[in-house]
Length: 84
Image (cartoon, rainbow, N blue to C red; front, side, top):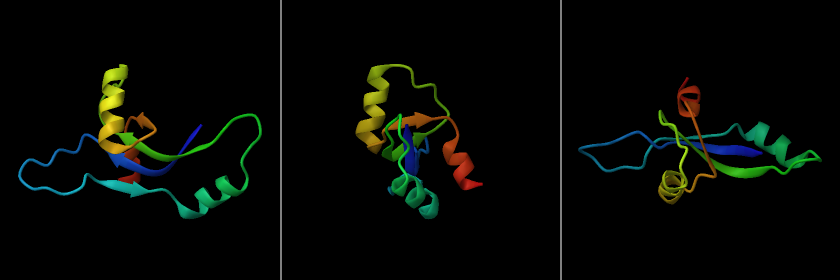
């Protein structure tokens, strides 16, 4: 299971300026609890999750996103939830 220390909005495109893509930190208290109480039966991996409006189903695109964001996984609309 992957726990989002941060969510990176991979499909946010800046056309005229250069700056990092939006990223949203995970809740520090929830992360601490999860790190302190790792559950038996499955492994927890902590890192970034890339979020955007895209079905990422191929290994090539997944590799591109990993290279661009260092994310461990992708999700739909996690960044939208973080913004809200």
